[in-house]
Image (cartoon, rainbow, N blue to C red):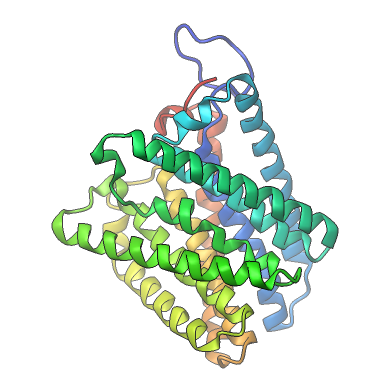
Length: 326
């Protein structure tokens, strides 16, 4: 990928790697896991899910190396990227994708899954601490609650997808209840803000992020045996998907932008949530809902990911998302 150089910048590979590459990669991970679960639900072979997850793993590792090269040149770029919404979302998606990689690795190498889980969990914690420090020092208007807060502060909820099968049940319970409290606060604050002010068209795609925690709470509650809560969050997720479908033209009124990456991982998470409910005895209806969600995610997630990655390849993504330069 070719970096976009501005006047006075030193030439060098990946000096301005944009964090915005990571949300669609996270969506692709979710899509691959969705096909893994969908294959089990519909009796399909694992070939497609293995192919998707293998390709996304390589893409993710390449993207991590690209951002790592930027970090090694100048570590302060992380704090600078956390000052803008695309940077916050992207860096959170980077470590969350690591958590999804741990869930992916469970089927192939359990020790590797354990290592990746802890690296990603520690990395996400460090980013959350850095963001909190930055928000404290920032002007009041920069501390306004946004859907991206879900990624930074509720994103830990992805960890139990790997942690529960690995036997870290107590850790998963702590994460579930702690992130649930944070998510409820963010949902309430966002609803209050929406009542007071109209959401600008360019920022509307970020509203799709609200779906992701509801879907993930469905999966984790199911894994922890909290079937009543899993069903409740499944219904909330279904309502959110319906609202997104009804308001899709309003959501995309500003046209394509890198923020469309925010559509990818919530849609994939919804399909996975439906399959989780079907596996836990929620009924055949959830299996078919998961199938519809998976088909929709398959049609939507890859094209968005390709367009965002094309912007990176052309050196335009960093400019459009105001990424920091090493």
